Length: 433
Image (spheres, rainbow, N blue to C red):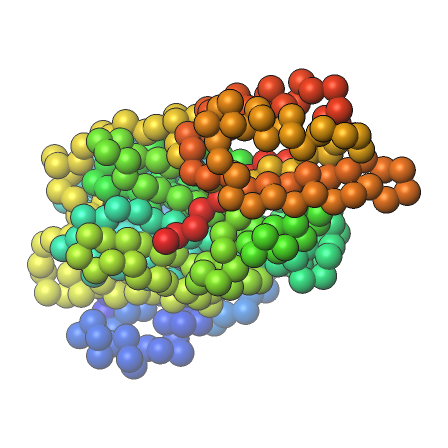
């Protein structure tokens, strides 16, 4: 058998053990021999878990397991960066393939990890690091290998998508929708990693690397979370025919690339606009295949375990056949990876949604449109809501596609006008034509 050492038995780790047990016969048929978990490492060996640990040696030291246990493959599922990095590098140093779901570690330290793996001649597999059970890594790296990838865009954080769905469908505030997500287990007690866009940025860095053949560049991703999205903006967007989603977007732009994560208005008749709740979706555009989409469960124990076990099967097949793994970790041969300049966010072009709160007085709209015209910005849609009960009026509009710096300069000029109140909102708009 191919022997696994599993480090971490949280929701995903337990799902992996259950899946390997339930689907053992099918997995054996696919690999050519059985795949068994012989060792696991956990922080608290006495804690009850929803998986069968009979016949499995339990360690309380993850690094020691890697160094001393007689296993063929190490499966790292503890998350974080400190111990996980030590575990992965220890496995690589001993010539043991690694399967991991650790997007944060790979996005930030992946270049060094993959280089260490290349030098040692071992595999680091990471399908579960992006979009849970959706096989997006394999699809881009192998299924679309004959294409020049023009763009990758998607909803790749289920927590944010659930919150925005609740706000759109039930009119909840961000705070109430977040509380519901936390109560249901969709959001952590400290949700900043998700709602701040950091989790999606980690995943986007990985997708961009395999799509464009560039080193991982998490530090150059422009990131904006969803904490400032309001029910008012969601309702106005719906009037315009759009939905607001947190999108992760990677695009080729001449000799450079765009890498950005932010709330985005997208037309409500597009595929991504219809992805609700905790589900994920990714749209890829290749020069030969055109646009293709991937949709499904982006998180959860069983969905993520499905991706982990798929990687385990790939690694096990290579071990059983004594063959060299021929698919590079980041899709391109290591010596062919090329650093690509990442456009600063102010140079990126998109359409924009703008909502302003203004005094109810004559000439407001004409002065706003005059500023936009002076900056060569066209208006594609505009909405003016009259005040109620003495409140300020609301003006909302959607612009044509323009460089971000031009829009920001116009917005700064508008905000200096005496009748413009505090509390404006601006979001980018992507149409996916």
